[in-house]
Length: 145
Image (cartoon, rainbow, N blue to C red; front, side, top):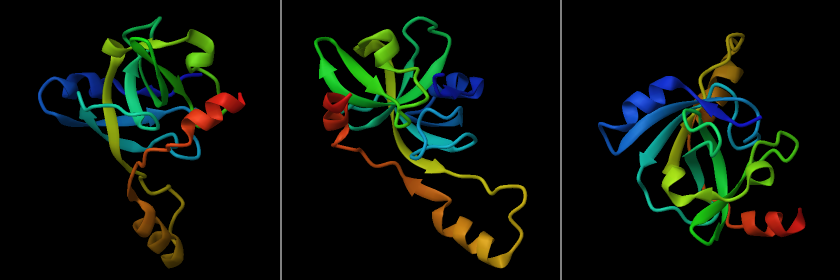
């Protein structure tokens, strides 16, 4: 299942170079989780290992988030960080460059409803906002598949 993004993402994308996107689905676990809010740099240059937002090749009204593993011809081979979730280039092949919309810069993980203990709140506060790093080993994982 592809990692979907909320409809608000599409509306916010046109106005500014940076915008929010909310993650739904498990395909990018452990990097991203369901409910995470992303700060996306629309139109940013993509390099192998970057986490990107793209249009699904077969359902172009659906936005997904994946890791750009490697450049192939005029497009990108994209993979989810959770190999068991599917919904990446192993299912639909190379994604054309014009469907890759932006690069994810930060993720915000909202607090869970049951987090009440002081220790849980401190742990959440220390990890709630993090940059989303590029994983340059993505192409090695690609060769291992």
